[in-house]
Length: 539
Image 1 (cartoon, rainbow, N blue to C red):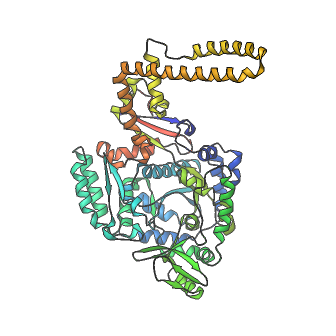
Image 2: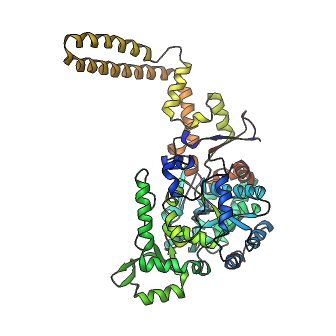
Image 3: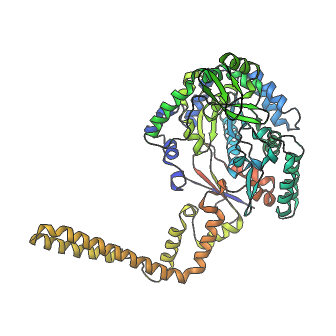
């Protein structure tokens, strides 16, 4: 079955903030908040300047090889890990927490974007090599968010079986009951559903932790493309930023720098991340709690753990893996261990990275090209067929239901439902009356304006009543429009923010992943709509 793609400017969808659309337009109001433009020219410059910021490639490669030591993976992955030892190899990175079963579709799209950007750069710069990397946010402890996904109309929730702390460290075997419940309804029956069940069982029931399970799952879906999964929850990686961690604990440098940058950004846009005096958690066993300073002591909230300054530094140097960066410092760790040229994130990630440029400058850490991940709307054949029967264009799909309904009724009605002509006529009459009244008494101008406003209101009310009356004649078609909108925009949200890839893998198998990777246009900076079947132009 053919797949077709359409690209739509983000500002035409109505789902993206002014900050995001201004960033993509390279508005003057944002140019002080980033180093490289999110386009071919920006990436070219970043590649040239990345060489001035070396990373410890020996630590990177040996640690990745250790993390992959218990996982069978294809040659493309092992070759890419080995290639990272070479000075002419760079990474293209995206990051996300290890959400259960990947959480939402945009998890898939982020990784596909990183893969396609790396592919593009490998073709454009044949003397260099680019590796796509999924940077796993395994230290996140928000199980309420990470332990949830949807399939069909049901929301599945895993409570961790009483476990606490970093989700990536949690044991995954207690997921058997949840998976059994899911498998009872996962379908339709067939080869692809059986494949998916096997992948999920192998991931979560044959690996010890959520982090290991996520690496396996992502490798099964994307390993053929050479995607490397990196888990930063490792002492070797944390040692690379010991000086930054120490500075944050003792001098709270990040708070001042990021607060100033955020204040400047907030003059026109909404802030996304808020720094603290200390932007670190203490991570140990089933614990991940914030560190705060209290007088001449440092304390771990909700525990009885305290340190003097000397004890704190001893703990840091002995166990760097126990110090977990929050959103303010996370990027510094990422860019200190990877030879990264571009970071791919969603709208919220773009927003908070724009607050961090001066922090990277202060610590002399490379600030990469910040790319908005490509958003995707996947349309199944039945929805494509319905869309075409209704005569709704791909661009029109993003309009609110009421706007589509009104347009449909107006286009298919035998009557002119607009009162615009009558309103213009009445406005001309009122103007004549106003001029006549003002010539007698200037104070009557306000009365004339009030009369015009009242008439406009009554005409609008009448127009709505006419529209409702006509809608009743088109009830069947309007129900189909509502059905189409609900299919593609569940809960009036973007599909990618609600649904999980398991909705589509049983229907298409690995082809679902392959089509997405193939359709992603990594430098287009537009919304991607993928239609299956129908009469659209072929990809």
